[in-house]
Length: 462
Image 1 (cartoon, one colour):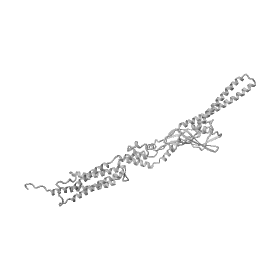
Image 2: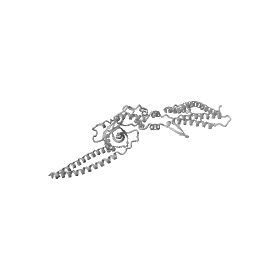
Image 3: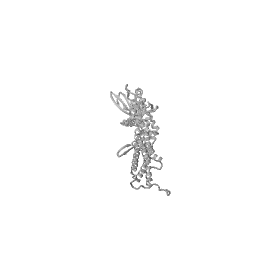
Image 4: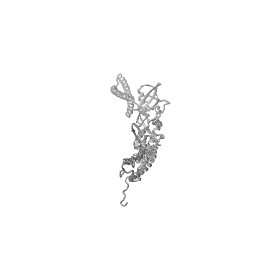
């Protein structure tokens, strides 16, 4: 019996330790509730968010505000030294490039504000006209070219490519000027040769001066010929570099507005359609667009997580938020099974009814173990329970119920219905009340056994 009473006492201390441990492990984390709200908010956003469709919609809104008409290419005074050029009647304006990115939460929130704007890049028609003129002139085709469409495309081009386009246009002008100067020098030599011939026949006194002028003109012709050759060579080399194929950008959307793009020009000549890809500079503007009807993430801001996740995608933000939870919202692998922390939190208090049931079993064994015909009872049996009945009440009833309550509150903060803790609480109260009464009864029984086995000695006068 003594061993069984000691086992009961160990069971009480084990119940005490388990109740404290469960209460500590299951203690509520108030910030979890804010994190749960934030996680649900981002999860709903990710489910409903169609990034490609929204980016396309914003680009369409913005690009139409930066359209550039092709009519200036029709002006008769545009370039008298260039090829004949006109714009087809049905040619649409050149739509601007639009830079829209909704990759991160902050970018989404920015476009959900009333003052939402998008950066666009509009075609520089003057630069396009200059490049188009020298490129078409190099085809050496007479007649008229008709531009049917111009489209801006992002490509792997730089400002150096645009600078080269201007240099080629300037070299073409210089080549035309050099050719005109050469033709003028040739014409002057013809005139002087005729004059010298005429003055030689008439033995004119001005013959000497005319011959000197002819010699000077011949030197000038050599100089102009050399200049023309040098300029033409530089023009041809620069044009060949400028006409090399350009690689278009593989990105379907621009996260940043470039300063340069490719203008894809489609034109016809004698019913034959051709295409030219010309690097041109872009004129940047910011245009207002209709704001997106999307959340401004109030739950994230309320949880003080906005500054942490604003530059992340929705999936990354959800991972970051989950990292802020304590173990109640984590995942564990037990015997190869993936278990959620909330499930373990719900099951953890189930230890306490089991310990109470074990305690009752030990009490029952102790109660039936005494026999007045058995072994000799020692003068002092192990204490059953604690010296104070209130301490018994706290350890057997209040602490288990408190620990279960901690788990229930934590589950509620994690937006889980505490069904298992509620059933566990009922079991703890039922078993605890029964065990509390049984501990008292067993204590009285042991005291009675000791008094019966060792009655007090009678006094001398008795």
